[in-house]
Image 1: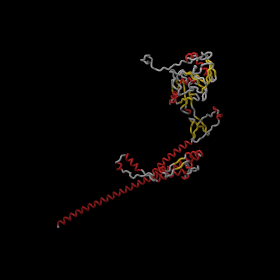
Image 2: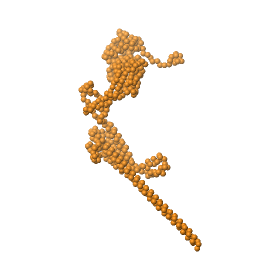
Image 3: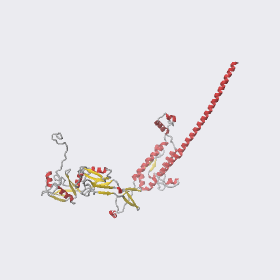
Image 4: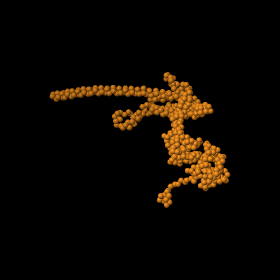
Length: 516
């Protein structure tokens, strides 16, 4: 039936219905076009919005009606007609929850109601038509705001942000427009709409005095320009400024209102300059709160890492040696692949640190730290929630247990003492005094450093010395072996000479005897 070859010869497509109404039509013409009656006694309409009464004759244009309602401050609404969606809209000019709009026909008029020419309900409602960024198009939002949308020569809504051009169809949703602006890295700005404040806001993606947002219209569109523009923002440039605060007489400037100094996070929320009436704002109040959760999280992580280390060290001291895997000789390695050599040597190295005194002494010293009082605090690590398992408790011997509730309680009660127990340091030269004044972390660090020095300076030195001594012994034995070998060669040669002489004498005697 349809299509190029159809019976009707009509293109197979969808047809968008056109509205029969436009703003230059009179009320009487709108009534005739929609098949509805105005209903007023004088042929016009009378109605009230939020108690404000309006009366219009039948020859009044729709534009004049909308302008009269929208310009009246007592009505507190914006009335618009969206020609794209062929519907009237009524929107409160007062924002916030609980805002009401009351509409009422007067004198038999038929302006509001399902059968009225606007189709807007006659009632009191808090469900006024707010802008919905996810569903409203640019055209619909403009109609709700009562903005006469101006477009560029291509019929698009165009503007620039920080030198970046944007163009949208009026049927694009507000969310589509905001997503495109916000995802453009070159624009360096974020566009948002708040139903609470009923306003659009452009925010620089940068902070401080280097932050700038420059906006402008493009090709005749009215995106910017004040109250009559779509965004309600004037064209031009807005530049940020650094946050400035005076602490102990020192002026500190930061590019962000939130910054950290000396471990304290500052968030500046008010301007105390003369223009903002400093006296009425009152004194600045600083509230310093402990971030206990963050401290507990870090301590818990410390306990976990400590336990991993001590478990690995303790496991080495109790590892069984497998005597089936002796060290490989060079000849044996020649017959094996590299992978097989690595597997063999891994097994051969097991147990070589079994009962190693250096590791056992380290674990014992580490464990004792949790029960020694830190001078100046009156507390030990045990007193703030730390404890250790028994050293003989299998492969987990010597590990830390952590009472989080006790730690939180002590941290709230005396944070300075807890800080000293955990991270106190000492400038003392005497080793004993330094140990007594140092916190847990310093003690553990010093003992691990001593352990490393012992391994490098003593154990490895002794091992290298033993290797050297063994090599010397081997060389001595090899020399003795060569000496013994040479002695045996000489004896063998002498024996061969004697045997030869004996053989000659034996032959001579045999000849003499045969001659008798």
